[in-house]
Amino acid sequence: MLTQTIDTSTVEFLVDRATAAPSMHNAQPWQFRYIRSRGTLQLRMDPARAMPVADLAHRALHLGCGAALFNLRVAAAHAGLAPHIELLPDAADPELLADITFTPHPVADDRLAALYPAVALRRTSREPFTGGSVSEALRDGLAGAAVAEGARLAFLGDWQVHSVLALVQEAGERVAADPEVQAETERWTRAGTGDRQHEGIPAYAFGPRRYTGRAPVRDFVPRSGTGERRRAVFEQHPCLAVLGTRRDRPVDWLDAGQALERVLLEATLDGLSTALDSQALEWPELRWAVRDPLTAMGHAQMLIRFGYGPETPATPRRPLRDVLEYV
Image (cartoon, rainbow, N blue to C red; front, side, top):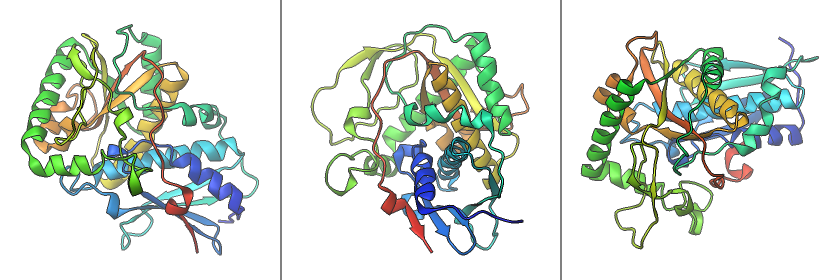
C-alpha cells in the first residue's frame, strides 16, 4: 500500500492531540515513534508507566493507549488525513500497539472531524453533578458511539446501580487495606512539584470529599496528606454506564479505549460532564460481577458516570519531547 510521508509539524500536531487522552492515574503510558523512511507513526506502550499491582495484565494501560489512538484519528480527520491503522502488528514486539500510516489522496472522516473541538475540552471530573437526568436521546447517541468502535455501553437501571455501587465500595475497602495498591496510587498522585509536574493527578484535581450521596467517588488523597478538604453533596441517583467488550484480549482493550474516548468526546459535545471509575475493575472477581449479563457484553472495561457539572481544569501532560521520537 502506498503511504504518504507527513511533515514534522503534522506529526507533532497529531501526537499532541493524541496525548490529551485519559489514562489510569494520568500516568500517560504511551510513546510515539515516527519512522521517516517508512512514513509510519508507531504507538508504543511505555512499561515504566505501568501499574504492576493494580493493572498486572496491562489492561488499563491498553485502554489509555487506545484512547490516545482515537484522539489521533480525530486529529487526523480534522487535518484532512486518512490514517490506516494496524493494531498489534508484531507478535514478537508486544510493546508495539499500533502502526499508523497515511494514504495519498485521503478522504477524511467528517464524523470524526466533528469531534475535534471536544479533544481539548474533555475532562475527567471528580466534582458532584447536579443530578439532572441525561435524556434518552443522549444515552442512545452515546451507546451508538461505543458500538461504532466495536464495544457496548450499557446504562444501568436502579437495581444495577445499587449492585455496582456495592462492588465499588468493596473495591475501595480493599484498596484502603492493601499497602501495595496504596503505594502505587500515591506514586501517581503527587504531581505538581519537582520532576513530576507533567504527570499524575495533581491535588487540584482530587475533587471534594463526599459529604453525602451515592455517586462513586475515588479518594486520591495520599495517606500522608494533611490539611482540610472541602466536602460536597454528590448525586443520590447517579447516571452510570458500563463500557464493555465481547472478548477480553489486548486488541479488545485497545478497541475499548477507542470506544471510551469516542463516548467521552460525544458526551463533551453534548454538554455532559464525565467521571471514570475503575476501582471495581482492578479486582478480577469484582470486575466479573460488574458486567451486564443481559447484554452481549462479556467483559466490563470501564464504569462511567454522566451528568451535568461544573467546568474543571485540565490535568498536566508530558511535553512532546518526552513522548515522541524520530528514527
